[in-house]
Length: 266
Length: 342
Ligand SMILES: Nc1ncnc2c1ncn2[C@@H]1O[C@H](COP(=O)(O)OP(=O)(O)OP(=O)(O)O)[C@@H](O)[C@H]1O
Ligand SMILES: [Mg+2]
Image (cartoon, rainbow over the protein chains, first blue to last red):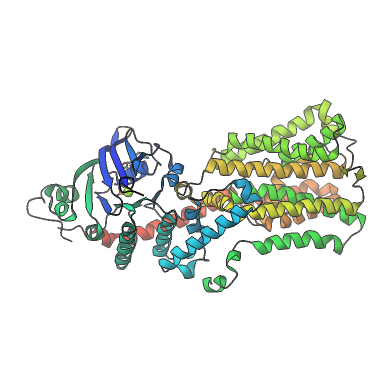
């Protein structure tokens, strides 16, 4: 694919209000292919709502979302996989009652063609699909050191591994763009490093990563570009170093009065 | 645990294949255990129930919704086949095709109207659909024979050969039950079946993985209708007489209870449920006076066991788990979030 086609994610002028509450206001940002773009902001800034608009779970009042130049239909979550856009959730979303392998296979199925009728009679295409899905799922699990968990029920895994399974499921979709809503939430600090490697690995493979995160250390260490969201608006953006020094950012996080003398140290 | 499991052939890992083999094995072995005419008659009824419950399992098991419409669909299949044969002289073989088509269409219609409803409303809607069918069986006297039932249904026949020998009857029904179980198993272990199940486990994650809930659930409804249609037609040709009371509210509840008690969502559920149902039937026939009492007791057990219904139960457990995960997340996240400091 040529570079012009692999532009990654583009969000232009997105607004969303719930009743009188303006949760997103004219948000424009990019998450180019092959790099990590972070979205930070205090609680309630609208980060998850932005993720939901991008992934089609929430219909925006205005604005557009593009993946590789193609506009995505508003509010159609189920169509996102076809556009090669994957996401994880702030609160763990895995398929309980299913094995780790089949959780990940669900991601692989999303890029396969095949009919329900073919599945009923277990036709040759179904068998091929099944084999391909399981093999690619297994390969991914091996890559992330989860192979020994393949046949365990996902709910039997410790929280951190379950979160990793969620991420591996998204990777099984072979996405062009990935939106991660607080991947470090709930993880012990010691897990931050492997997580950073995992996310950096996605970008290295050419995926456009939009990383929504509270953990500043993680954000500052791996992001190329940081967008600061506050009360639904883009407050400022820039390199991690620039954003860190910006007095408006410090004020948004810590409240007025801190801006002069202090800096976000990490 | 996981290491032991991964020693199994890979494709067998938790795919319930052995449950399919037990189902097939029982269907083949039971008539060898006892092959009197009466026993074969009982086994035939059981095999019909296997088909009916395998159908119900698509919705109540795989999709994790509680449908109470299956008795009505069962009846619709029986009446469609019976009416076609008695009133329109349609050959039984054709009636056996017509019945599942009719019921599939009806099930798709009920599915479209009800599946977006929340749990309790979904139960009420499917119960309502079953009840409307039950009323129609009793009221459309010209066609159905009304409360007195439809008489004079011919036995099943193929190329002029009548299936009246008990062993032939059983063999035919069991063959269809086995085919039905294999198809259901295919679905269960395919991406379609997994998506259906995944949708019940995490709606947002399934959507994000591109699984369309509407299509999947409609498929589950269509399948359940098709199986109910086949089971109904077989019931009509087996009994040669059908009346509305076979497909009433009690039957609707009994089907759900039998499946829940024996393992909804699992391949083994339908055969165990069918054994339970046939056992109850045989017992109830011997002690006909106590039938309402037996039914009452079963109903009470069901309500006791599952006050929220199966889906409610699962949802509640999932909720508990999610709450726990969230709590843990919140606790562990605290030190992390304080990295933003002055
Ligand atoms: N469905 C909704 N209806 C009404 N208000 C909503 C809805 N979803 C979100 N909000 C409100 O929108 C605002 C932004 O919420 P959002 O979840 O996007 O914030 P966030 O930046 O992700 O916060 P956090 O860091 O706590 O995850 C909050 O004030 C929230 O209460
Ligand atoms: Mg959020």
